[in-house]
Image 1: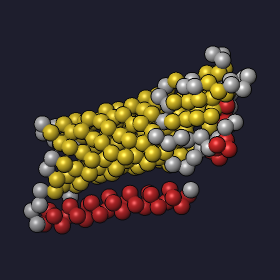
Image 2 (image 1 turned 90 degrees about the vertical axis):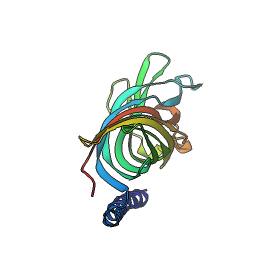
Image 3 (image 1 turned 60 degrees about the horizontal axis):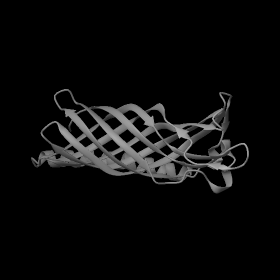
Image 4 (image 1 turned 120 degrees about the vertical axis):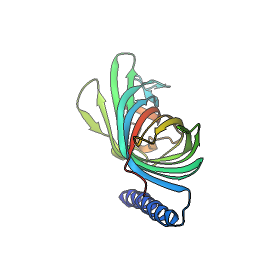
Length: 220
């Protein structure tokens, strides 16, 4: 797991370095390609699908409720006129609350390193749409029971969350700032079969809406 995380981070950093070098070489040949590198962060509105056992041992379907959390990271855009590739890497706090028998309130916290590789189409000068795959690597999982202390559940979580991302955004190049509204839908079952005792959770699939803002360090 650590080796996979290291390789993905190395790949992302290499991609950013390659994009910057490519931008320098193209600028010397008066190409229209532009590269940005910057920081990003914002709010997650989590709405995971959670199934869990009740106190009688029966499985309850879709007992999860949404929660608000945050994300922060870095990004790059390789922009050629209307179209761009936008790789990102960011830390994201996810998970959600769920209720057993309408009385026992639990919370499942799942923190991930998210790596989206997005296509970006620019239109009307300031606006863009985003779409592409996202790969999440869980780094922390914790269950708290009825407001009590958290219990580590990392060993009962699968190692990769595959999701699809779509969104719209606004860029103000004069100030080097951007904002986006995104929807991320996870397709991976995150609970390992051997770990169904984690807070009585038997199934968890991530889903969230994100409001994200970014600041570009500038073109090279």
